[in-house]
Every structure is written in structure tokens, then in C-alpha cells.
Image (cartoon, rainbow, N blue to C red; front, side, top):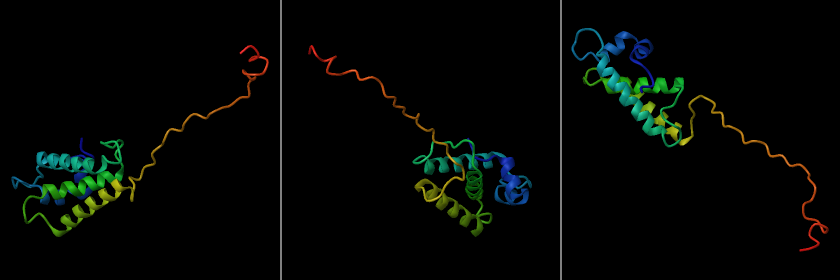
Length: 138
């Protein structure tokens, strides 16, 4: 399961940017199957980094993971050397550094995890079971 879909990726980065990154058949439209593979691989890389600290896949998907997944997928989808720009490489490297920081606990996902609290213990004074009179015949 990818943390972001192809339509969300196009909405986030713009159709021209995505098409320039992943237009394998040069028809002016992005190659959606290649983008889906890149998104799945990006999500797998995210899961591989975060599984030491979180249950993966993370659900619901925080906005931070959607953004990181998009940056990684755009980099992975840019197989043409002319499409692989320094900006894409920098975004990919920054995304991987952010994942390491999240996995180590130096950064968070931007969601508050609710930890169930333990039930409260109650003590009530009861009558003593062992007294001198109850233990008289022992």
C-alpha cells in the first residue's frame, strides 16, 4: 500500500513536473504504471526505516509521510538522466534523513499516539482474615 496515490502526487507536484519526471513513452502524459511502482517502492523504503519504531504500514497516513513518499517516488521515477535534477536528488536525500530522524525518535510523525492507560488500582480496607482468634488452632 502506497502512502500517496498517483492523483495525489500529480496534485501535489503539478502535472508538468510529474510528466517531466516520468514520461517513458514521450506522449506528454506521465506513465502511471511506472509511478505506481515508484510509489510502492518509496512506501516500502519508508516502512523499512520506520518498522523499528512504528507498526507499519502507518495508518492513518500522516501528512509528513505523504510528503516524504512523494519526494522519494519522484526521485525513483526519474530514470532519465535529464529528468534527474539536483533538486530531486536533494529532496530524496532530505526525505531519507527525515526518515532516519523519525525512526530514531529525534523527530515525530506529527500525530499523537494515544497510549491506553492501565486501569486504576483500588484498595479497600477489608476485615483481617488472619487474626489471633482465627489462627488459634493452628
